[in-house]
Amino acid sequence: LYNCTSPTPRVDPETYHTRVYNNLKLMNDSKWTRFVDKHLFKEYCKQKGVEPVPNLAVYSQDDYDKIDFFQFPKSFAIKSNKASGRNIMVKNGVVYMRANSAESDATPVGRLANDTVALIRNIIKDWCAPYMRRQHEPQYEFMDCKIIIEEFLEPTPDDIRVFVVDHQ
Image 1 (cartoon, one colour):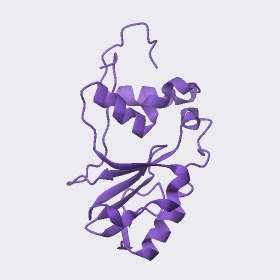
Image 2 (cartoon, one colour):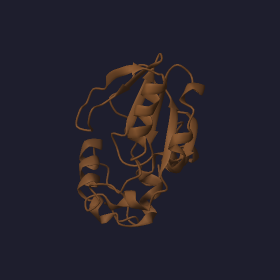
Image 3 (cartoon, one colour):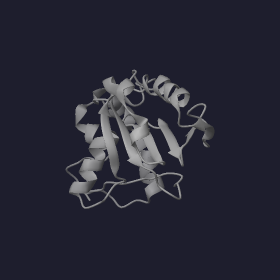
Image 4 (cartoon, one colour):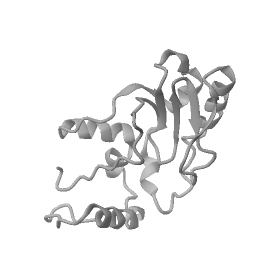
């Protein structure tokens, strides 16, 4: 990471991303929370004039079993504010999820119904567990875990990356 008091050199995003990723283990400090917590980073983006994907709702991780998934539109995304790969999609009433975080494509597991809601809850209940890559990415342990329900983006992007350079 760059010294925050010196000007940031202009680099291409891939090089910048690689440099940041290789230095994540140095982020053992709560000051990084607003940049790694998806919910807080959305608020930061709004302050900087960047409109993020709208939230339909945000819940404390402790309330995972109280979420009424039937109240949302036919298409929405369920995400953790902690780490990556913790996403479940509901598109036109069909639930899509990946079998593991190494898979790139989500597969349908059934229509949104009581049995798929039970499956969703069984998965999201562990989203706040201590992060398995803690020694490499300690910044996640400073977060208050949340479950975010977002609008569904169509077409679905492969990835969304936002780079903050000199607070811009």
